[in-house]
Image: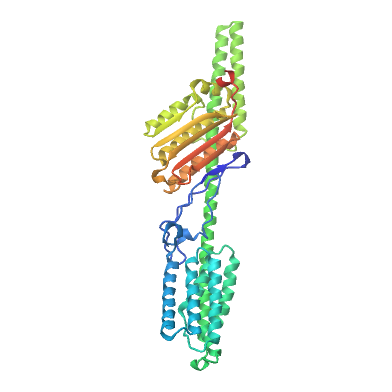
Length: 470
């Protein structure tokens, strides 16, 4: 799975918090031992997890068909009921009432493994089976007793209320369950002419108990759902705040780089002015003034370009990188010095020098930032190897950095804070690319997720490129 972004279309870059918290199971408050982790992406927020039962329940079974432990337990218990009903058929013969009773229990049992995976389908099947069960009790000439399958009604109601995407399913399930609480087996037995004499007491007490169970189940499931949705809103708000801070920090870094660029330009102006004054000849003055004009124009252009993109400022932070593309091989060497085996395909020194002359300061800083962040992420989250390619791609510069992930799985958000740092680093990188009308692609590079790919492309001026003059 790959995450693709066209930064030209984005008004701002935001990054989610890597949600590694394990939710509690609404069926038993048991955290999911292998629930999927929500990874941070450069332009999205965490997907809501309130209805993601895989994150909230303990799962068992094969990887592709894992179901909650609670569903498995209910299935086994109701299977015992089916076995008991089959024993009744085996002992007394295939009486239609016994066979129908067994089929109803079998239908309810078959719906249990899907209680979380497909709560609406499972719930509808259970409710229809209960209607058939009540109809059977109304006409049966024998006393079938009170089948334990009725416990599937509150559990189905819980699943509909807690996990169904549309809240109306929960309300509909509640109303149907309340009707069933009144028209319960004892009530039906009492009006069945074949079994009426077996009940010498009004079944109102049992009906009241059923109403209480149904109501409490609905309110409990509704409360758990509201709590999970509230947590989603809290995480989303925190993500927006953290992402805004990451974007702001990147712009503040640009502000510090602006200080360095302007300082460098003014230094050149001062040196050339002093040279012209010291030599005193018309030729020296002309050369000095030409250099002053070029240096001041370049510094002014960079200043206008950067200031137009900044929205705030700060006075604290790490030193800004130098906007010199010829230093790119040094960045690769520094990564290798940390122990990372880097396979690099970089432009030649002549090409980098030409890019230095034709690119704006912001474009040069963007390339350096992408390379620095990409190699840093490869060192932190990879297996110790990385491949980087920097090349001209039509009228754009393209940077591709790939690194195998330990164990062949994504570790973007596997360790809490590390996932946050990685995600926010990508946010800063994406913000840089947005400022130069670029785009970023970041994510596992194949279906197995064994490699992490960082692919950045942004337009640049190659008019001084040696290839243009061959």
